[in-house]
Image 1 (cartoon, rainbow, N blue to C red):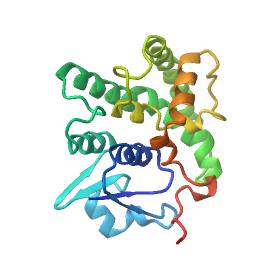
Image 2: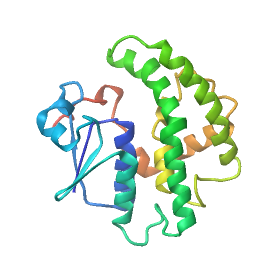
Image 3: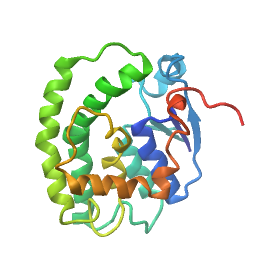
Length: 217
């Protein structure tokens, strides 16, 4: 199997963490975001969205990071990242849907517009996108905080793929134009998950490495 991504991609990091957690043998090809690798004909033939990550398993090509994490977890019988129990499994999928459609969609917009674009010289911040995203983040953060007040992880008593999906933007907390102070359970969860070895190993070596082609060893 081969995973196509770029260094520091939040969506790619969740998949890399799952690969590491499951000890899967997957070749990882890091593309140069700034050089336009994702718009090359060869890559667009794999992923017409021109985004990462993309997983290639023989003749099977899969994009959408949450689908990839589910597929990889199902490759390893008996693992606890994606439980086989129907109710627990549905709960994992529910939180993956929720983070993608609500919490991290808003969080991602705020982070991209206020942090990533200025840092990578991708143009001015679009305040017309930031304002509604902050409203949505203020609506969904209490939902997550309330859940984490009663549960150590998103589902059950251990890490699942729902956790790797939920924390994909945790490194952007500091500096975003959102007050995280009222959400102590979210903050504690992010701080705890940040130190999970599988997640930590997916982190870029430095801010300057994000999006760039890795230097040869």
